[in-house]
Length: 227
Image 1 (spheres, rainbow, N blue to C red):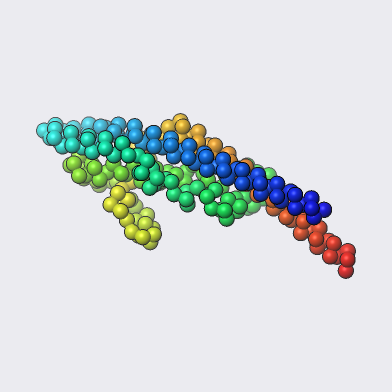
Image 2: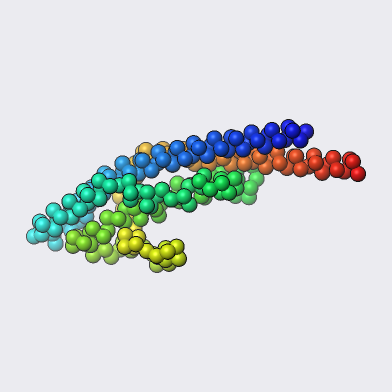
């Protein structure tokens, strides 16, 4: 029976490795979708903020023009900004072997219920997306479009950042997720697929755990019989 259990354990491990690879592919697909979305979002939102502040900007065409050009330059390099805020290992549990292997099918670790761990849910990306969009705020301030009030990162998140090694200037700002949030169908599709794969990883972990439990029970049973 031990060889049968070993085969089941190995099959679960192999299946989990395959799922991990697909999760990375899906993560890359999501990041690519964010890059495309941000390249469109930034100029559109910048234009909106100029219009919102139209009364104070009608006599400042140079400021509007310089702001527009700065935003266009930022929108031309979305890859680096997306990498900074979202291509971060802690946001993708499949990149950590322990996190991946500890995913369970329910909060209590019991199989049988479809459950996506918090570490893999799309909601985990809400704050990083808001911080990515917050990259627009220093430009609003620099070119006199707005003063930046209302965009500050909450104090407790500033403290967390300091504990991790300090804040960069652009990390001080975040964009309210309900104010024209950065989103696209491609992003949503990839996020849903990642959650589906997380469920599959949970199932493989449950299979491995069941096989390991059965193996241990058989081993102890044999010890009893041989005693």
